[in-house]
Length: 250
Image (cartoon, one colour):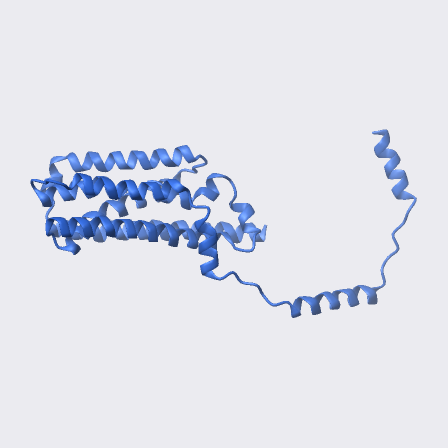
């Protein structure tokens, strides 16, 4: 306390002179001229993708490889190809999305979204880059799985696509829905949700009604699941953008 009082006395002994209005105006004009001459610096999307790819968890790449290998292994010597391929994809496709949503939301999980808002590339730009990378990786892996099954068992490619995309859309949509209502702040919690969703898909594939799903019903499920996933993805991006604007104004 004594040191602080002594410091205040020293400060009171010195007075800062008031600046002249013309000097203040001149300084502001000089600053404005410098700002006007600055060329806005934008990060190319390709550069942003390359930078974000470095920070994608290696577990995402591992899960893609595991799903592909398991698909090729389990599809050997099938008795009822149509039914068993439906079950294989219904169970294994969610593995592709196991680390997808956790990777997208990891900024929020680790409490870094506010810090990212102050950086050159905003959260929304980083989010788009991550979605593009993860979505591309998922689609490439899923295409490999579907193409292999289609060629191996002589099943139309478009038909196998339905079997793969329906569970993929459901798992990602539910994960985003849970994140919308529950504030996840732990990687373990996020991965646990993914694990529960994979187990849920396995349970659904073992139920008796699964056998009764016709091709028309698969098309309907594809349309509904795609709409559900896109709606949740839209709300997720909208919420992130709104939070980003709120942080900027505060």
